[in-house]
Image (cartoon, rainbow, N blue to C red; front, side, top):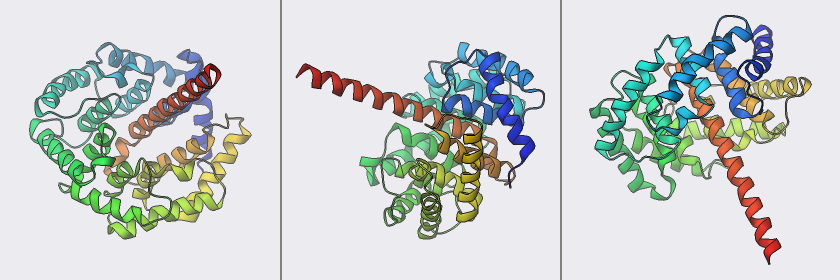
Length: 324
């Protein structure tokens, strides 16, 4: 069931963020900011204006983390405002944990290191301290030995999240990966990240993989583009234990509403998936709910980077063809 009042607020937040923050270029990150700001009180213009100060503090004290210098910082600012977290204290704490991060030898790569630090600092208590970072390094190395071809810097954020809730995250992800390989459409470039998200589900690996595959199948049956391929997003949504058909119907309905509002068609289906997922997390009572807006904003930012890389590849290919 769509909460019409919240949906109308979301519709109003998008142009408010565009105008107040002078953010003219549309895209998944700006939409993710509106989604993250949806729980803040006040008129849309007031909410957009409140994002500026904490976002500026994040940018000024970025500790060389690319993520805090990018527009995704406005989504982070929304979460900080919602949870009453001082952005300056957060950045100071991140600067300290970055030294510990280097000390234990964890991989450093934008934007994944920044996302990992946010997950550590906004997650369970003590996750940013040396004992947990050592455990994270050991888990990463363990997973790298098991599935080295599918493990990299992008694996760190979901691993940091999974490890906060289960100490056997690496071995659990290895088993989940194997189960997902057995299901149609769940094996691809981001299967490891999806597997790590899926380890937070309570069921056995094979059962969880079947549930995620059912979500994908329901979306695909309704001919919803793009969303079925976002297996990391589907694994995250599956934590809320949705009925596949009800979930797909909700995504389809949201996609139609976005179409009526003349949202751009490029990322409309993915935004519908994120909106429905965010609303389910809001009422789920799950511990991951408080960080869900940041996870989805970071994924939106990664999508932008992928789209930019694809465009560069197309341009380079065209140039090479012309030169020949």
